[in-house]
Length: 350
Image 1: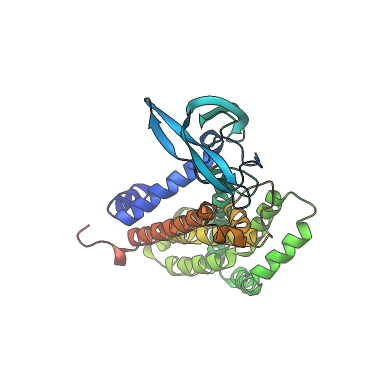
Image 2: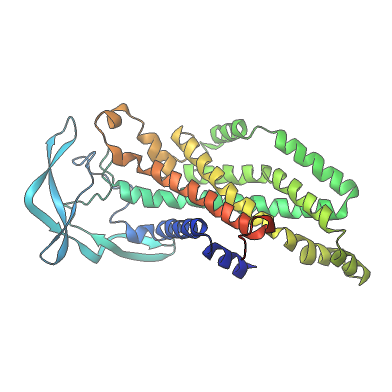
């Protein structure tokens, strides 16, 4: 099945490009401490709203243009003619733990602390936007995977059992799903965030909220899986398994549920953007991730100052570009997977 999906993606340029883009984004988030020249909380009040630094090839080496602050009131910087700083590759720097486990201090590139590098500029406190973008990707992208994984597991298990067993288990499961689907998720999320904000750190609080909402959001997946199981349990191969005396659990988990994986793959792919946008919206409103942690939504929330638009600090809006690209990539990938698993959408002659 995985090989068929991969071959189908290779025949669909949009799906292949989306998969490569998502692989790149998740890889960048995974190796963020190594790829970033500093840590996301490092401040430099002498370099606030610094524009993106220029990279120049000079004397056989890649160098960084040096800048001078001309007007602090408007954060106006002027490049210093003929003054450059050479990039150091794989040089030691700020210690970190790769994957949260392996102690290390090597960074892909770095410069002396007296001449900081800002590939995507700096924010109001002189923090590197590029570094915060990489670290924020770890939270914004992971939240979607956690939520979808939990939602898919609960929906698959409960919906499969309800459709196969029928009777009172089916009625109980469907009444429970109807109740959960009637719960307003946004208001529940706001109430949970307000109630838990003083007990846990912001990142742990938001992950806990995502887990709770995922536990409440499996209802839609369960209803669809139940319908699929109801249509499959009368198929000849299921009837043959019953005649051969296979146990009900074996029939359910070996024959019925695997035939719903195609739907789950597509549904999960299309559901991830919802969690990413939810995190971005709440953090933008100040109800999600809080300082000193970093996320794309939090960075966008900090960029809503009118000064940023009046003085054209466009680099502070790069988290919004990252969110747009991620959501589009997941939607295109979901469409490609749908075309791959549904024979009605398969390419002619393939």
